Length: 340
Image (cartoon, rainbow, N blue to C red; front, side, top):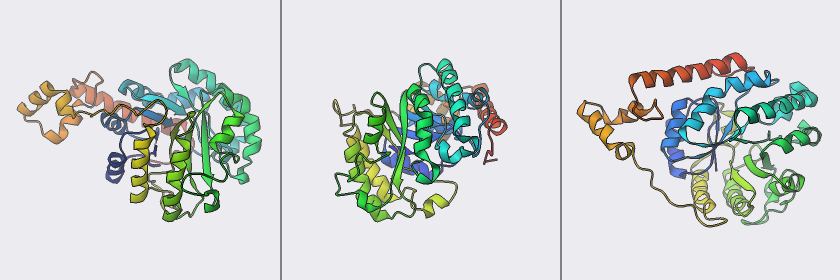
């Protein structure tokens, strides 16, 4: 329900939007600090699609690539997230330098390696760019066999204009190429995660106000759609805001309403659960912390480093070391790593 920011750390504005929308399935990048993932889990988020970060042009060998992301994947599992992993995104655009044959061979090698290392995690197929400029039809045919080996399909679907919308409830092109229903016809045994969706570059607030409610109303009726992630909450690169893709107050309000409806589909509504504060969950530790002179605002940091919760300074050092190791692995392994 949320496509978390295309940046290397979540900002105060991002956290404000996250809290306002509420607990829903989220999609995030492997770039984020481990502390951000801990905070998301602490807020009650559970269903996460982790998009592994990569540069443009090419990829390292699958084993090295997976090693580079192992700390983040392992940490999410330790935190108790239900993890789906999307290994790359839009290979026909971002990894076109490998060529269809080169990427197909890479993915065929990656899939069994991932499934061997993480047999309990969900593997999401790479979502193709539906833009005709990037030959999606050719790439689909070349990757069909590999996609079938994944647990779930990754889908990107963008509407090009408001003619695609008949009303607030239905779309004129429901079975148009690249829509979820069209993908169902291609892979009838696979559930889907819509890892990006939205309008063409330059779409207006009015377009989103009209389109997004209908999108959620339609897609939540499709039992094989496991999650929907409109692109994108915010971004380090200002181009996405200029092109009309980033969230504003109206999108956040729509997503908050959609989140409430999302859990009411199928067999009934998701059980409402109050997420207790850390002080309530660990009252004895909190009392000790206060008596020792600890500042209330730092109690989360005091607990951050250990799954066992009784965090020591060594635990926090371990967390910091893992964060540094994760970033170092990414820098060393990935092409065109964009952040310092």
